[in-house]
Length: 208
Ligand code: GTP
Ligand code: MG
Image (cartoon, rainbow, N blue to C red):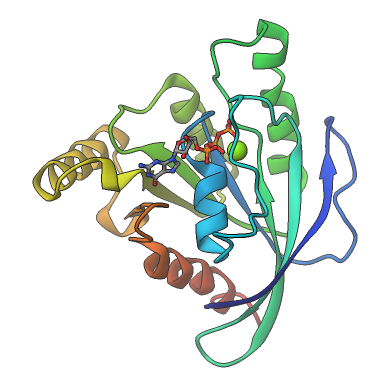
């Protein structure tokens, strides 16, 4: 899949808020605060100089769901459009509990109420074991039956051998097959092509 255009399309700040118009298919990105979600989205969209998703100096600040309208060309040559949905990062310790826990109703209302949701990309830092929030999120997605890809972020922070070892450990911890997991670095761009191909496949399977 080739990215051809990106524009900010709106935000939801509370459960039940209206997603932007258009009825487009949606792919959401989830993960704990500071996992590297904004960096991944910018790298994925090829926006390394003029960014779309803000890389935060104050983690946990984004408590909204942000929608970006993406124009793309699929591997088979067809043009398509979809919403890339940036979910709020969860689990940041240094904010008041009320703010910290506000993600759950907002995210769950979105995930359970969006018929056009084609898949979720769940981010986990390759250096750290999955958090309680990560596990809750993955279990919730499994309950809903939403196709889920796990991306291991910041892969450049480990050497080749440690990377392979961590990948195996995390696959075992999460109980996931190899083809559901992609290693990614926003710094080097490693994993970008693989992730784009996997996202493209989510559309190609269902587009008439
Ligand atoms: P919140 O929006 O606060 O929830 O964080 P986020 O998940 O959007 O993370 P963000 O992209 O803002 O990155 C957090 C920090 O990790 C920043 O200092 C980034 O520069 C760094 N970072 C993100 N991705 C990578 C990566 O692939 N490699 C390395 N080395 N650093 C990264
Ligand atoms: Mg962010």
